[in-house]
Every structure is written in C-alpha cells, then in structure tokens.
Image 1: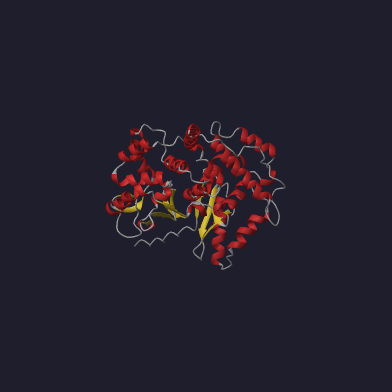
Image 2: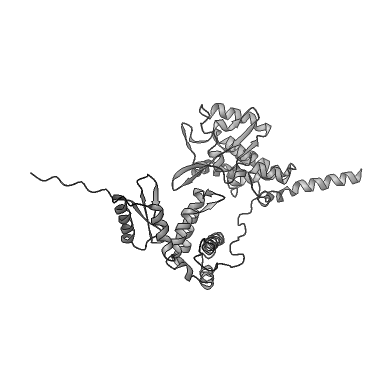
Length: 383
C-alpha cells in the first residue's frame, strides 16, 4: 500500500518580475492587508529570502510590518529603483493616492525608460552629467515620452532631496531647462455642426446620445461610460457628473473625476432633452444604477474604448473627419460653449477644469465669434 503523499505547502506571498528585469515581492499579512517590499531585487532568490523572513516573523509572532519596511528602507542609501518604488507606493497629491491610470503610466515610464539606466545606481551617486547623457539618448523622436520621463525623474529626485528628517541626496541633479515640457502634437480642428450631425447620424441608435453628450456637454469618455440613470436629473435638465471609470490592466476601476472641479452639474442643451428621455426609455435598463452606455444592450457592464471605436471610426469617416478623435468631440463642445460668449469661469465650471490655462485652450477657436463682432461693429459704423 502506497503511502499518502504530503500535500504541497502553499507558497507564501508573490513575486513579480518587472519589465526592468528586477523582482518585486509582496505578501498578505495576518491583518488581510497587502504589504510590498520597500525595495526591488536583482534576483528572484533575494525576493524569496525577503518573503521567507516575513513569514518567519509572522509564525514567531514578532511581525511588525511598519518597522520592517521603514527600518530596512532607511538603513542605507537606496538604489534609485528602491527609492522610486517606495515613492510610487506612497505618493500622494493633495492628500489623495495616485489615480490608477497615473500610477500605471509612471510604472511604465520607470520600467522602460528610467530603470534601465538608473535602476541599480545608488541614488546619491547619480550626477547632473549622468542625467544629461541619459536625456540626450532618450527615446529619439518620441517627444512626449521624453518629456514625461524627464518630468517624472525630476520629481522623484526632488522628493529625495527634500526627504525629512534627512534628505537622501544633497541636490536635484535633473535641471535641464524646458525638458519636461512638450508641444501639443495633435492640433485639434473642432468638428463643424454639419460634421457633428453626420457623425451622430451614422452611429447606431444606442450610441447616438453618447456622441451628443460628448460634444454638447463636453464630457469625457470615462465620465460617459460610468454615467447612470440616477445621474440624469430631468427636473432641472442636468447631468450630475460624480464619477468616472478607467481601465487598467484589463480591469475597470470606478473613482472620482480627475479633480475636485470634475465633480459638477452640466446643463443639458434643450434640444437634447427629448433625445435623453428617449434613450432612457428605450436603451437604459430600469433602476437608478443602470448604465446609460453599457458594453452591450443586455449587460450592465462598462464599455471599453475599443467597443466604442468600432462604431465611431466608420461614423467619423462618413463625415470626412478621419483625424477627429473621440476626445475631440469634447474639444468641439468646449469651443461651441466659448462661441456663445461663456466667460472663462463658466467654461471652467462646465468642463470641470481646475486652472484657467486649461479652459483657455478652447477659447482660441472662438475667433469666428470675434469676427462676427467685428462685422457687427462695421454695421454700427454704417448706421
């Protein structure tokens, strides 16, 4: 009679190999929270050893996660990747954690464009000349990536130089003037009213209102994809924008809009109100939590951008505007609002912008209205 084989012991924690080639370790503590190593490791064995030490602490009931992470992180001057990983995990802006899309973008920039050069270097050994040489060779022809990578590097160095109670570096070695700025590559030409009419006409029925709200209410895709029946106030004819949805690593994450200003009520133009009512009656499931624009007509799941693009791309081509991105419909709506004579403050409120400079981008196209003003001045002179 064969002896029963012992059940394999379940592994403790998890180890992830980053695109930089380094390893990141994490485990779930007795309290149910996820804890990550304060540094990344050059070898899987090192990551495994770190997890084994944490497991032993738990079994001996001497586990103290805060002391483990902070003490080991503070004991010596870290490598750039160790500091940057810790920075990314603990980063806050105005007291809030980074948005999932922002965190994902930072991770991509670190792994692909920064860590290959600086990842294994001690952070206090990186000089101004090192940064300049790295920047000169960085992503030729990809100006946006160059600017974003440099801006992130500079921000991380700035945090390291201002750490309390003691900085890790004496000064920020990244100070190339203008390297964090980039010119807008895509120059938006707003859709005309006729082009907008054709686009909406070509969209399938359950997508038509989505296109109209994107333009006439200047709403973002993430705001539209998370819009629910309870967010439409037909008593005041307003859209209440309280949330947005983003897709990160294949998962939909619902959260607040990009900023506090993004939480807003937007008045629906009167000519759209009958269309809103029709959409609610014929294309939206009952219940205040039902999505206005779900992935499919019989499911209450979020729509992915690719689902929308399959119907939007043929529609824009029919209008002769293959250059018009979906987000450019929001730009179109912002320009239309500016052409009505909306003040800068009114534009900021309607678009959900925090700074005047953001809203001012849309006023340049109100030049047509200025020409109309000039024409009327000439009429006055004629009188």
